[in-house]
Length: 298
Image 1 (cartoon, helix red, strand yellow):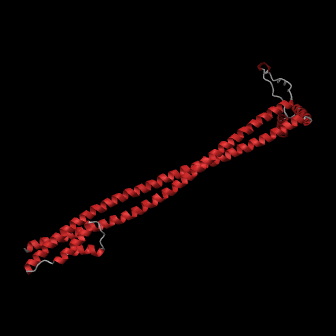
Image 2 (image 1 turned 90 degrees about the horizontal axis):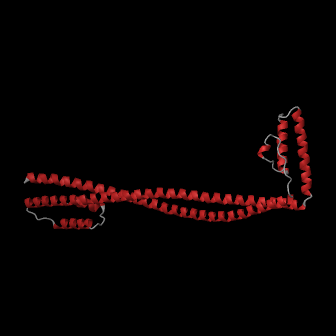
Image 3 (image 1 turned 60 degrees about the vertical axis):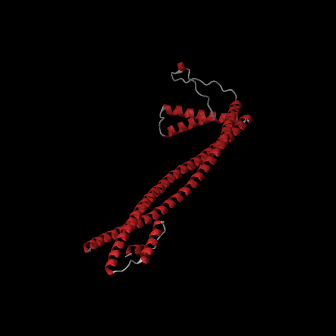
């Protein structure tokens, strides 16, 4: 009998240690579950906020794209005005005289110079002045270049006097200048709106990427939460089994002590433990004292 009692005491101690172990593991898993729940909920909250940002940037992008379309229509009208103004200016200038061919050995190709304009003449004059200042024309060539520069200046003056006396030409030039300013303003407006639309699009993509990152973190926390809950359930079941084993051993030891002493078993303690086990099995949360009482039952 003493040998059996010794073996039961060893088994009781072992069952008690396992019950403590599984209860501790279960509580740790439940604590981790709470942490993962908080992390998941925080990540989901950030995802919802980021989705709002994505929607806002998408709306801004669509608004700016609509503005781009409107500005392009305005620019198209400005381009049309420029073309019409150029046509009117050319008509006001009258028929241009056929330009002379260059005497550079390429007459056989039929290449003809473009008609001189004040702008082209001024450009040539500036080029010759720069070359003259750099000393690229010396000797006889210097005299030739000086003569050409005087001819260009005289021609520019003559063409300017002629154009200034032509009312239609002056009005056409002014109309062209106004049209070109309008064209430039419209083009700048298109570029500004397009830049704003692209910026909104880039931000939308950036927020979308951040949404994916935060959603992945939330899903990872949720996976860890499920694994932690699974481990908690497994350890809880093992804890219940250990308690049952512990109580069975304690019941046998109590019965042996009662038989030796000629006493009956105390039903009140047994009923109380059964009530606590019933609560535990039904999923109710027991206090630390109640849990310890389950293991102190003897």
